[in-house]
Image (cartoon, rainbow, N blue to C red; front, side):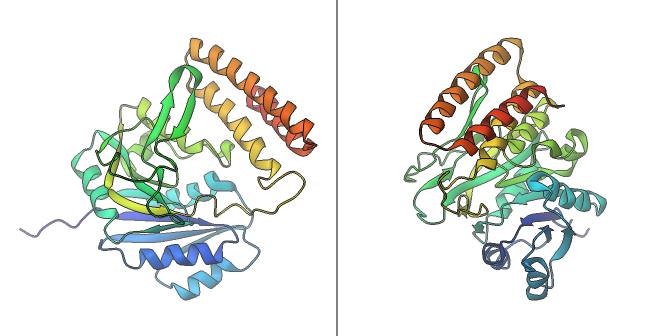
Length: 304
């Protein structure tokens, strides 16, 4: 009897004018010690020719292109649909501003294969600039205010998060999902575009009875924000549009997944928090950000 082949894994990277970061990520994936995977690069409306250039340098990858930037959600959904259409067993969403260790994929794939009651798993994610510090060791969550955070962020890794455990949500920076869970839960919610889409997807997968797992024996490194273009202006380094998406999408999340009590409490908290932030920004003359948060808050409450 011939041994069965390992699960077929699609690794999806979304590139938006990010040649150098994506190239470094692809180079690290070339060292993977896993035999049955295909890297799928989504060129998400790049105007710098990076998609075709990367395809010429890494001919073994599959290149999918979108004529416009359809966001983290839209870009990844293109890759997810391709993976489902080609009967992949598992799908890994991986930020293009990451570097991976050669053995990082093996424990993730093995765990999902052996534990069908789990829908998704994640590695331990370290900061690339300071490799002894953590970026994410699982997702933190406080239900009554619908607050989420990355566990361990900025902490020196001294083994305090070396115990594998279930987690309430998994970051889209690196999430390996079974195709079965995707078929049941659906793909990323395209309304989100970027930010909180990973939390919403995680919650949706969990509502179907799947569990989520953090596996510290798998490790990658993240350039944390490397895919965002940072240009210093009078509005600061973080572009106003990011405040818009974060504000709007957090309210989308609350509307989609809160219970009646947590809805009231979290909505009150978000309103007070956003109001205080607006006052601070206005006093510092950052009116584009004020408008972005006001727009995000309104649309988060009332848009479909």
